[in-house]
Length: 64
Image 1 (spheres, rainbow, N blue to C red):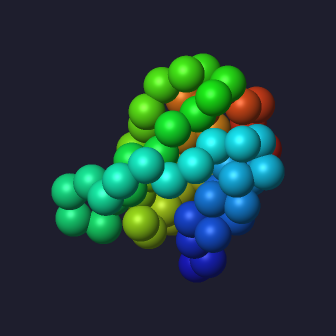
Image 2: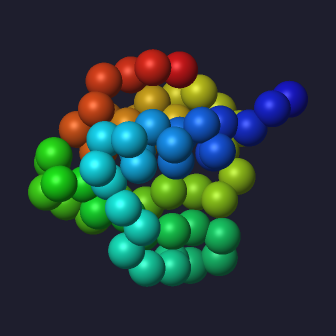
């Protein structure tokens, strides 16, 4: 099963979100200028629900 991480990060970058710092384990902390919050991105997202929830936190519409 293919993961969603690479495509998710591409969508986040296109929207102006950027990597802020490393998190625990394989997680990363990103910042969204749209929602003006920091949020966590897992290093290995296998669920479309998790990918869509990350987009929601970034202030973007669902796309998976």
